[in-house]
Every structure is written in structure tokens, then in C-alpha cells.
View (cartoon, one colour):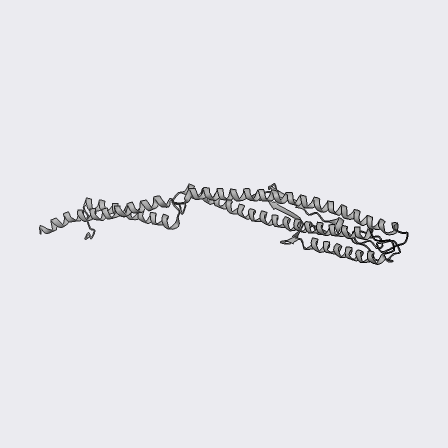
Length: 300
């Protein structure tokens, strides 16, 4: 049986092995430079790889929570913006009512026009509250929704969260009561025979009492609107604090994961230069080792 294997001298074999190791190291360093990571798989460093993956997974979950918090802030902002506009409308309604109260007892035509303006302003409040919706959530309409914001990436029942109950503005959405200026409406004269803004029966007391009732209800509505806006504003401020905290925590987790697996580009670049130099020296060394064998060949 013939032996076709090639026998290398010890020096040649040593130089070949050294050159192979250098080539392998160059490949590894090139991978670090191209990916920017010193740990690309569990084979490189199992502990660092899995730690970094867990940190990145948690950062991803918290990023989703941060986005939901941001959405919650927008829901509250839509509600508070609407409430500020409702407050402006209520102030206009109060001014209209005050103007109606100051008219002469016999000037029913002017009061009727002012009552119509009052009712038109009142209808705008309904439009404002119904339009104060963001992403399908409305916190101030009749039958207001509830906003729930999670702060924890856990799925357990005891998750840290904030539940914001909607505040239905009942005081400013009461349907009109016929003939009495009920809710914040003023009914048309003669609908039930009772006094309203246009009525002059009984002198000034015949219409001022109804106007005073409307003004009192407006004052009550203003208190409710301001209290609700303050509550939502406080919740929004708290959510902004929580959002900033979550964003900083995400950055901390991602930085920690990067520190575990990312490559030091400056160090890897220096390693590459050194390895390339070593590779060149290895090639020269292998060539020198081969020259001794060529000298033996010349003897023949």
C-alpha cells in the first residue's frame, strides 16, 4: 500500500500553523469591524450574549410602554384642550345671560334673540365634548371612556398602571327642560306657559329669575370644567414624568447591552493592522523555512 502523504519539516509545519491562526484571527477581527460587535453569537461569549439579549428585550418592551404613555398624554391633551374651549363658551353664555338680564321688562324681542344666541352657544359645547376624541378615546363626552396606562412590562394582574376615569360633563350636557330654561338651555316662549327669557309677565321678576338660574348653572358648570381640566392636567404631567423615566431606562438598558457585545472599533482596527503585519512576517518566515529544503534539492 503506497503512502501519498507529504511530510513537512518541523519549521515549515510550525510556520504554517502560525499563519493559519493569524488568518483565522484576521477573519474574526474583520467580522468585529463589519458588524460593530465583538459578540455576535453565543459561541463568542454565551454569558454576554444572553445578558445583552435580555436587556434588549426589556428595552423593546419598555419602548412599547413609552409609546402607549405618549398616546395617553395625547388623549388627555385632547380632553383638556376641549375643556378650555368649553370654558370660553361658558363665559360667552354668561355674558349673553347678563345682557338679557339687563334689558327692559317689555323688551321681549331682544331677550328672545339673546336666548337664541345662548342656545346656539350651548349646542357648541356638545360638539366640543363629542369631538374631544383621540385614538377612539373620549374622556369628557356623555358616557365618557376610561384611559388605562401601563407602566410595567410585566403581564401579571398587579402591574403598575394608572387608570383615568373619564369625567362626563353632565352639568353642561343636560337636555333642555321645556319652559324652564332647564339645563343650560332657554326654551321658547309660550311652550308651556311658564316664564322664560322672553316672557314679561310679572315685570322684571318674571324673566330675571330664569336668567339667574341659567347664570347659576353656568357658574356650576365652570367649576366642574375647571376641576376636570385640573385633574386631567395633573395626570398628564405625571405621565410626562413617567414617559421621561421610561425613555431614560430604555437608554440605560440599551447602553448596557451595547457595552456587553459591542466591539471597540479603535482596538479592533489596531488589532487588524498588527495581524496583517504578523501575516506578512509569517509568510516571510515560511519562505525562509522553505529555502533550507531548496538548498538540499540543489545538492542533487
